[in-house]
Length: 467
Image (tube, rainbow, N blue to C red; front, top):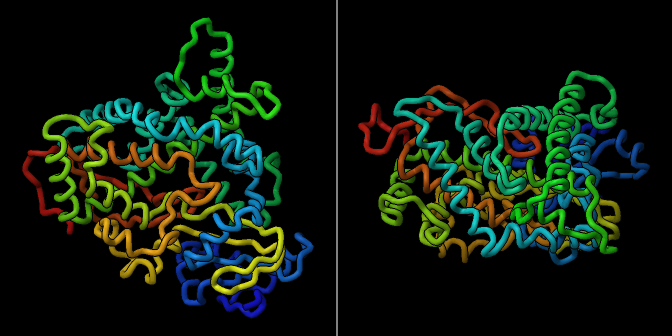
């Protein structure tokens, strides 16, 4: 099947699919399921003129076999499409955005820090921070769970990056990330916004520039302090970067170190915080799941805090975590790929050179072909038996192939340990009357704060739990 014969929803001749994506990004992607395994979304005459490319289009992949082909089997035929200017400004030439040999070298350098036995050494830090936070909450306290999880994961990643506690910097970082999310979404949604240089003094540009300059100043100060420190022996990411060399054997420049630290600082806590917030909300809405998770935590841990050695025994907790990531994958879309040459997908579709290929975990995870009743929260989908029957690459919350998320093992360890630590002492109930919807920004956030009430385990329940 050639690309011109593909079907898809009606879109604007001038502006293509972008008005629909801007109006309802997540819903539009789900509606694309009706058009088959590969959905062609014309990008409109304006983009065709800018790209000097006739019939410029994005191709949404809805079949796991095609996803595997692009991300793994024939990944060398694809490069990353240009990203929003604000996103490029934030991450620079960090591992998230580089390609080719530079990207491979960066992955080889950082992989041990986030995988294997190295990761388990972070367990005490994660559990300690989670336990301290839960201990601060009194019975009946109302909290913003998204904000609480963001500050918790930020405290963890700051220690891993810099070997010290985060202080007043936390507020600036969180506020700046919120501004960055808004600006990046605007630039992806609006051609005019994406073409407007960041030096143009709009209100959002000024807020963004001021905030990220503050974060950069913090990072550069920490780099300078470490370079002049007489005491060595730190075991953090900054020390790893100081010891690293480039392809020619030269130490990394301060700019290269800055890009990697910024990447891990933002990507290393924002995604996990969002995943945890969604998980607590789902648990508050499903009493039987919450009770089964609490029972498992009690059976595995008794009255003690979890360790890394307990994680393999927290099987149901892992199922809950996986199902939450299915419904609300923090990375709701992967970076768009552009192919170098014509490519025939397993589905039979032939993509022309220069095709923009769009892969969305959100869309794959809510496809009824792979997940019956896709909007239902059901951790049993991730039992050992169910995992064996599901097609590979239908579930990709951390991407796949050569660009699979480096921090996957760390994120899973952090998520499971925080859930087990806090579920053993508290229950969280969502306050009635809230309408919480997912919002597709740089990550999949909540559209409004999730307000929850704390109930200490063992206290009497004030009202029946939601089912």
